[in-house]
Image (cartoon, rainbow, N blue to C red; front, side, top):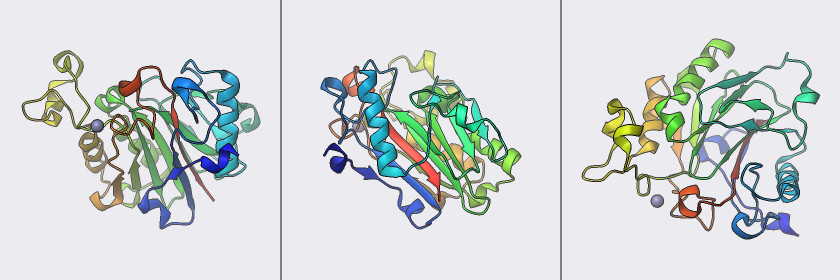
Length: 257
Ligand SMILES: [Zn+2]
């Protein structure tokens, strides 16, 4: 019954290509209660583990029967590279485990779903239709100032021979410039990034920063899609850490058929 209420947002750019399979889940259609209502997948959110496990199963049911690969996201800039010829895969995807400590993951494998969990941070999904390579990145302000996006693109080039001009990028619902207040920005954000501060306000445009980081590496402007949905402004649809403090994490999932 619950699964019928599940809603999935998609990037128009990715929908054009049948190879890429992806979805941005909302908070609707899961089994978690209270502040976590209801499709929470974050095991460190404080929610009941049984509800989270159920929610993860609902996502598999919706997306297709492949293992979900979760990351232990630590606001760093490490990228996990998962290649077809890697072995011991069955052990790696033990359900309910965050398999790798990293904030981004790249693969050329078709039989896994790469999952990023967010509540204000951005999930940035990348897809190279030529090389058939996908990536999923978690970037909050800490990942953004470390330029994890640039790091991930460098790895796609190095490890898979991707060309940035072929890569498609999608930026998930996340904290918009309308709500990204950083009162301590002088301590937290390096001066070379203050160009992203709004005029007369201590608010930052991390959406623009991500687009610029993609384009700096050669991703074309018309290959970048930002849903431009602010999670804090739509906290009844998505989880928002800033909007709620105690809250869940919604799922951003990508794979290839
Ligand atoms: Zn907002």
